[in-house]
Amino acid sequence: MEKEQYQQLEQNVTPKPPYLKNVAKAFLVGGLICAIGQAVSLFYIIFFNFTEATAGNPTVATMVFFAMILTGLGLYKKIGQFAGAGSAVPVTGFGNAVISAAIEHRSEGLVLGVGGNLFKLAGSVVLFGVVSAFFVALFKYILVTIGVVSW
Amino acid sequence: MMLPLLVVLSLLNGCAEKEKFIVYGSPQNESEVEALINEEDYVDRSTVIQYDGSMLVAVQIKPWEKWKKTKLEKKLQKKFEEKYPNKDVFVSADYKIFYEANKIKKDQIEDNKLSDKITELIELAKEET
Image (cartoon, rainbow over all chains, first blue to last red; front, side, top):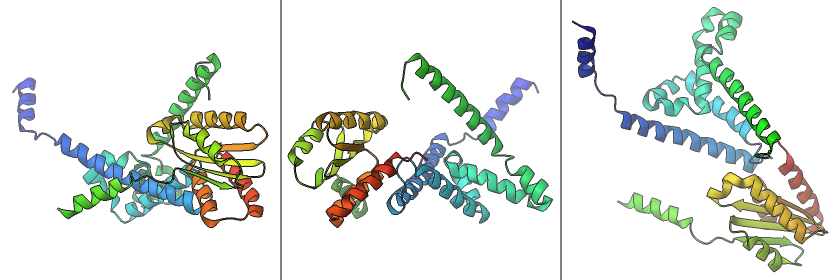
């Protein structure tokens, strides 16, 4: 059997992934997570001395905390299987990546196991986040210096 | 059958006309302030608290205009400063400030505490982290 023939055969056999259904699921679950995040943010604004500008930090911390508890109970896995990117793109997905790595390497000890592998999955998020933030800031700084936009 | 109807009704309920302009504090130029804010069509709701020389203008900007929130805030601040040069005006589009300003109105806070409360809110609005 030739290579092309095999590929033809494979394509005929492979079931088509239900793209539209997956997108709808991701949209709904991702939207739900963001709605919960908005509720947490409003909670901090109304009951504590946080403004719209400052409520972001405690909100992110709380959402990661929720994801941590759900991951520990093994529930976030199920949400992830159902919603895909809908549960991975919000900050709760980042929390899940950190905590699940910590749980996985617990048996290897606290320092080399948990400490060394904590950012095994989430490290790339931190790295590319910092690098892209640097370049965006640099770009904006140049634009402000030229006088195209203001801060 | 009933549930979607209820949802639609409760959503439409939000469209009902709310009290758009509230001015609280020493009554001196209420209609003037109201007219000033009325000129700006991006303002959704507003609450103005004034005491002696200080004036706190808390506004909520319409959803699609919120992209330009800081710019509109500055524009409104400039407008008010030009109109009342001898007053200490502070304009904020933050929800927290709007919420607290409405609370001042609701609780009918007395004049002697009002000025402290206004300075407190202005300090809060200036916080960045």
